Image (tube, rainbow, N blue to C red; front, side, top):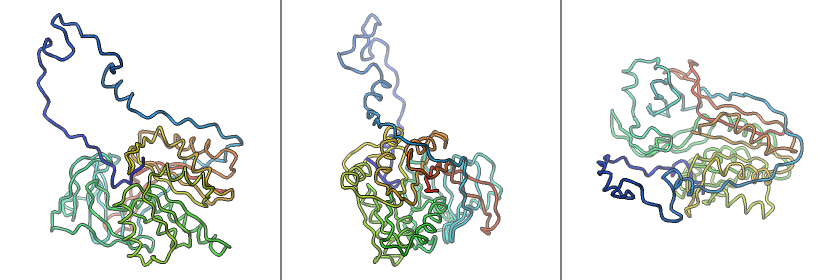
Length: 372
């Protein structure tokens, strides 16, 4: 039901527009010009047909108890993280530094004009061209010289591989550093107890967050529906020298996994969940964020420990206000105490040098429950 970002894709292909046939030759139109009666059970139109294929909403019962306290809006921002920073943005694009490479990728949120000269943008090492949709496919162009598929990167003392994927992503989402730094601090504070804290990372993609948690002393369960992403995450684990850390790499549908965890009575101290807008699982399961997210959060709440350390939801590329995910998290965590803070993750431009804070680029919505 739930793939990684690397596997999300639209299969639609643009084609030539067919010429319309005369009315009397069109299917479903009688010689007298009146539409023929549809067969019983046939959908009235394409819109009705699409609705008929959509999954039914997964209704959940209202939780009892008081709603948590709230902090809104809360903007979490990153400027730079080791080998990464946002150099400039504008005209629907962003210029980024990833290790030794400067990269240009589409960014619909960048409505303003760029600050830097066009020549600097043209001097990038890699430029993504093609579908500008978050999940759209395209290709990379290398203006200077052909580059390999992967290259080494490092964030928060974690070594991993960047990769030029057909979905414009490169294997890491640096705006998530704000969540990862919080998680590392919490885990390091909790380290030294009787048992290591347990972290569940749903839609874990290439595993950078899982490796940050493991390095901070957690026992980690990483779930992703893509075998390719799991393989990539294992590569990153070896590259970081963390093969001895307790990480379970699980290729599975996220909803099915947490349903089983609830039946088994397993619980976690921290849950990270970063679901796509739409996707399919390893066995063709369909995931629709607006239909399935309430049920997913409800299940996650049921497998949080009573003295849990945190619960984080991030949502990319959806037409919604952060208040949507905030109110959902508030209702989900009724009776659990604590506080829900919600808002946006943003990255600030840092210029060519990486130390010149500039404009803020919004990347995603989030809601985060904390025990206090």
